Amino acid sequence: MPGSPMPASSAPPAVPGGQPVGMSPAGASPSYGPPVVPGASPSYGPPVVPGASPVAARPATGRSRLAVGAFVLAIVLALVAGVQAYQISRLSDRLGATDRALAEAQDADRARLDGLTGRTDALEKQAGNVFNPEAIATAVLPSVFRVRAGQSTGTAFAIGKPATNGGTNLFTNFHVVDAVWESGERQVFLERTDQRFPATIIKVDKENDVAHLQTDGKFAGLVAAPEAVKSGQQIVVVGAPLGLEDSVSSGVVSAFRKSDDGSGTVIQFDAPINPGNSGGPVINGSKEVVGIATAKARDAEGIGLAVPIKTACDSFRIC
Image 1 (cartoon, one colour):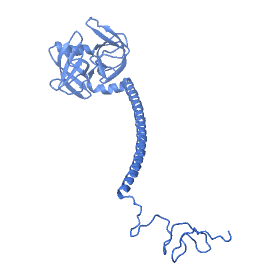
Image 2 (cartoon, rainbow, N blue to C red):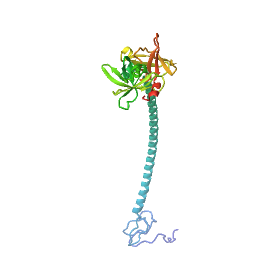
Image 3 (cartoon, one colour):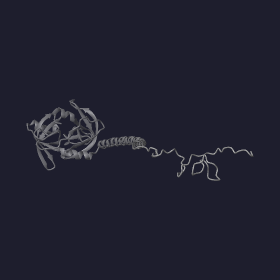
Image 4 (cartoon, rainbow, N blue to C red):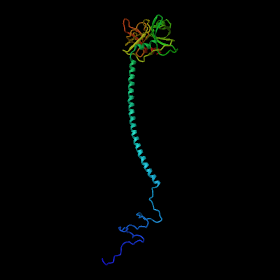
């Protein structure tokens, strides 16, 4: 109010040599910040203790950094191990599937091979069972001879293993050598082409019309059939009919008959034979001896008779 004294100023006291504290320069608005130290820039951080260094934030220690790095590395390794385990599992599954497929393929190949082997064996057996007179004659002829016993002529053939003296055992009919045997002589001769070999009558079976000969010459013995021949089975007869050596005829087994004197069974066959075939081998398709040709029917064709080879083998034990 006019005339009234001014109220005491509420402004802060002035600092000597400076402007009032909290006041801005002339013409500026008053400032209410912290006191300003002469010659220093205003600071808005925490108060500074005179004579002391500022405290900085503590950096992380080396041990902490190692722990963090180890943790991160462990995580990475775990991830890598997991990926590898997954890949190994997939690879194992693939390998297992491959092994199974390979085993199945091998089983299939083995089955096919077994089938081929079985068919091959069957074909070989069939081929072996094919009757081949030429092959039979080729295999048998070297063991068959014309035999001369005095004035008689017949056929003899090597049989079985070599004789105890290293020579060869042979069979023929008794009626071929009977004149020599009855006279007390024992020597006969085996002939082949231009060769002649002496042989000895060792033993005879008059009842079955078989004689056992032996020679010092070494010849391959024919093999006796282990089983009896059957009716209808094809056979080859080798001998020297009318003195004509190395003659071959073929036919089939017709039947089994009782011999005229009732001493045993004889084989009837239809292969042509003549005087001189007596004592010759009757051969099956396996090149085995099944009988010894012994006679033919008079005034008839295609009826020949043979002594079963088992009868001869049982009597002389040389087969």
